[in-house]
Amino acid sequence: MEKSVLEHLTGSTGSCTFRADEPMAARTTFRIGGCAALFCLPETPEAFIALLDACRQEGVRHMIIGRGSNLLFSDRGFDGAVISTAAMDRITLDGTNVRAQCGAALSRLSAVTAEAGLAGLEFAHGIPGSVGGAVYMNAGAYGGEMSGVVESARILLGGRIEEVSAEKLRFAYRYSALQDNGGIVLSADLRLKNGNREESLALIRDLDARRREKQPLDRGSAGSFFKRPKAGYAGALIEEAGLKGACVGGAQVSPKHAGFIVNNGNATCEDVLRLRDLVVRTVREKSGVDLEMEVRLAGDL
Ligand SMILES: Cc1cc2nc3c(=O)[nH]c(=O)nc-3n(C[C@H](O)[C@H](O)[C@H](O)COP(=O)(O)OP(=O)(O)OC[C@H]3O[C@@H](n4cnc5c(N)ncnc54)[C@H](O)[C@@H]3O)c2cc1C
Image (cartoon, rainbow, N blue to C red; front, side, top):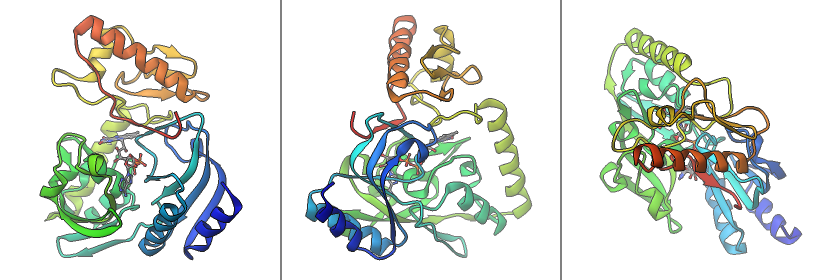
């Protein structure tokens, strides 16, 4: 990145941390990915918006990440600016209404609301993403989904801030309209229910235990690698195809849960993509089902 461009970006906003040549392996739960030319951590929505403006003015390629828990980042990294929302994490409670900034961790939001005796977000405690990433993906687990609790979101779309209703977000399974219109979540307004603190905390403990028992949480991953197909479960189809434990380089179909591809320590993006191709091809041959990635590819491929 040219020095004058870098100076404009770093000078355009006060409350923001910048790092040059940041390894994305350190910023994603898969622990895979080459360097971003510039990694930016704005601390306020104002700094975030100013930075996005400066990127547009300078023609700098940029991408948004939350907590990097649904990303497979390219080995080549990204020759542009990766903007992380993680430092914008304020949560405000007002009765059963909750406002969360885009970078707030879902696990903290779930814990804070349960502690306050609010029910509805227990399902989200074990999802290691941010509020923005969870709205974008309509994240869900154990019968709950963001679509069930989001009332509206403050979105930056085409340089303008808009208050968008849940209906306009057109939530569907692991889908929101943001995936098509490029809108960026600044914050989300959620509506929860009055509940019972002890019951919510017990439910969280129970769901966390079920995750620890079933999922390979000791390995780098981005969660379920494939979307749930119309028929059956991706993990079961992969197991039936004989691929549980299959490896390519440092990437492996988890021996604990075949729906996860894990990083055994030194996996590259290339390893994961070759393993993905093997899984997709074999499952299609054996069961006629076309698996589709839930994990999103990022960076310069
Ligand atoms: C161990 C493990 C378990 C998981 N379990 C689940 C589960 O049970 N259910 C589930 O649904 N997912 C699960 N996931 C996947 C992941 O945690 C979710 O998809 C999560 O919502 C992603 O949030 P993130 O902040 O990490 O997004 P990132 O991975 O950083 O980004 C994902 C996408 O969202 C976009 N994005 C991020 N923030 C914003 C924003 N503010 N505005 C617009 N776009 C944005 C990014 O550009 C990117 O395209 C799991 C992952 C792991 C590693």
